[in-house]
Length: 361
Ligand SMILES: [Zn+2]
Ligand SMILES: [Zn+2]
Image (cartoon, rainbow, N blue to C red; front, side):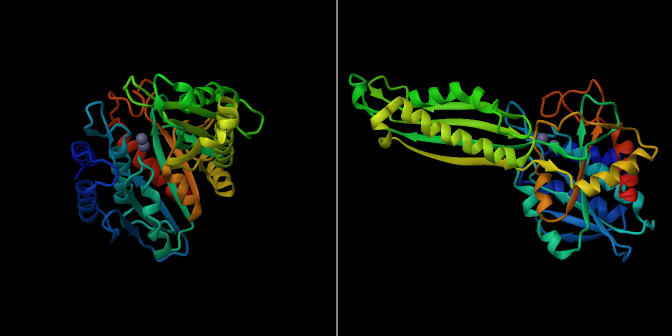
């Protein structure tokens, strides 16, 4: 089967995070029929080993899940159909070859909701992995250009839902209640100042996602409210500082608004969709980047990390890691837009780039 055919099959069977049953079947069948990889199946994910009985083992991670369009239907708006196809093709190209190392191709589910990488941790207990590699296609860069950084490739981010519980009262007697809407609006006005403080190593960002206070019931003065934000930072350490600062300011906002009654307002919070920053292992990044500079690959260093997040950052807990980008075309529609589709021209180029980088890593 040609890689373009595999791609079309995956493209036409998009599945949401943690529901990638058919996708995994398609990939396993391809790997069995077209490569010499030994498959280790974990049901929610699988990996294939190109085994040379060598001392060094590197892993190549491909993500496989789809996202929702505006109608709530699954579609491959992030190009993971292309990522998994390129990894399959690279595995096919490597089959039967000797490159002096074992290579494990990991097909990881659930990248988009951040749950996938951690679910693949058993692979690290079953194998001695020296290094794990990952890539993402990046629109607005020249097709096939390898995009490099020796530091952080993608931002850390987390959703935070801050819950304020005050006291409900009759709309005719608002002075008898504690309506958290005022504390929430006080906090919202401070967000810009919070992210511009001098306490972070690199720039941080806060995005207002939703405010939810009371119901459309005009007889009631609300007693409960929620503020939901997405917080982002180039470094995971800065993200913790930002979370703590926002929570501190939430408490201060309550004190400023409710003064001596502030102890009657409680604050709790929940973190959702947490992603660490995708930080490359420095020594590995320096070595691999130098090899790429000396190779025939077309490359470019990024000015700053991507503002989106990747769950690949979780693998740092388990192994040395290196993540890079692959240009998807200067005028290509952006990731997660409804116009986006992984460019077919990139399949062969990307697979060959994988093989080169696997060899030099
Ligand atoms: Zn995505
Ligand atoms: Zn993606």
